[in-house]
Image 1 (tube, rainbow, N blue to C red):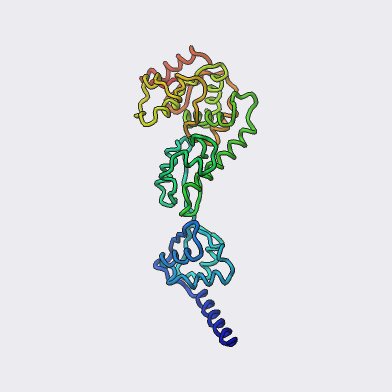
Image 2 (cartoon, rainbow, N blue to C red):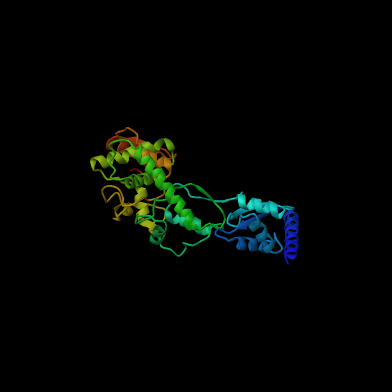
Length: 330
């Protein structure tokens, strides 16, 4: 009986050595391999069969278990070459040398745009499509009541099959780290009650200009207004408050129509951010330029003219805006 067991063991060992070193015959010189997040070893082996890498799953399961690595096979995107051996494949999958997918969230995007990008990405596992915004906040452990501005715009790399919720958690955690670090290093005597108020300001700065050198000046205008009790009077907050009603053309009646985000009709900051601010906008909100400017107007080339008083501002409006019949002064 013992000899029979030894003989069977030798046969099994010989088979495993043969299997481990035999070359796999793929349909193409290279093949992209996708292993779903959260898969067990058996599930991974079956996925290899389904993707025509292996003929059957059990030999690969035995190979991985023989090396004691059953829990170390990593999900993700891989690229393999024709002729790879099961042993080389085993090393690749346990080392986790993946070809990752990525998704980019752009500075100035709203949370709705962020969700839309996630929903359209085929590499993402969609678990939040039926969730409300409040459901998402609860799932990621956020204490805030509204999601706008809470996620850091950046490129996030992930293994195919990672859930949108996990990506949102990463973007939320990244924003908290970036914002808290910047808040600790902020200039003195800023009129913010909290880092969240600074985030609101940063979102306005993000929407007002794309020119890096202007952000601190834009910040100084709005902070100067806050200090003297002057309304911010910024178009992007009005547009955000209009929501789907905004058709691309901001009218005088829109500026007079009161919403919680209309900074022409309401004092102080709006109740939430209006977009995702990037780090440069956050830094500008916390390190504004030292100026006495209270007004700015677009020049028509993406830059702005800044003024310290209404008389100067009116001259700038006449010079840069009224001649083009395109009022855009603030």
